[in-house]
Amino acid sequence: DGGITQSPKYLFRKEGQNVTLSCEQNLNHDAMYWYRQDPGQGLRLIYYSQIVNDFQKGDIAEGYSVSREKKESFPLTVTSAQKNPTAFYLCASGLGQRETQYFGPGTRLLVL
Amino acid sequence: GENVEQHPSTLSVQEGDSAVIKCTYSDSASNYFPWYKQELGKGPQLIIDIRSNVGEKKDQRIAVTLNKTAKHFSLHITETQPEDSAVYFCAASNFGNEKLTFGTGTRLTIIP
Image (cartoon, rainbow over the protein chains, first blue to last red):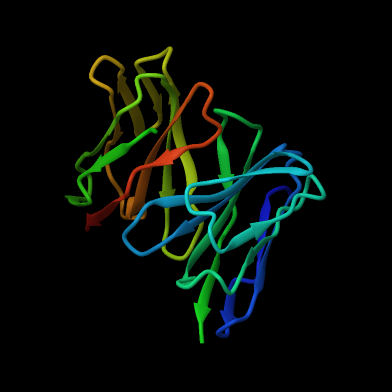
């Protein structure tokens, strides 16, 4: 069963805590992306990776970090430096530049 | 960078009528334009896309038109059904740009 999976579905973060969101794909896609979605707004790009062991900052990278050690996996860490982390986080993957991106089901992050 | 504007932000249509959502983009080099449908609490799903070498593309009740001169593209949904109710996002991507720029979304409500 091919696709993109994200876990957990809901995540709670305490003040000063780092949390990591998981994204896995078995579509054999080279490119992977992380977006943040706030109510009533579009999708804003946090980080993206076109190939293993390489990634670039998107439009709102401050307070976030990523790694791309495997083609299938692109975890996102929301650090304590991100002062307003409450949002819906979406992971996507695709064949690369200017190609279709396919989205996972999302993780909703809430701050306690 | 690229800027994508989307209108209207909300749209209500009677079941069976047509719905039209419009987007404009700023970068004349943009050449890939996907449309996504997002249901509540889920990730966006690609419903149709168009590349700049064609002016129109159709898939059953859904069509997209592109006017490169005016730098706008539109989503047309005919014979609307209750399951068409969702938020729709347009996006644009240009040659040499590794990322999609999204519009702010249109909440479409189909009135039974």
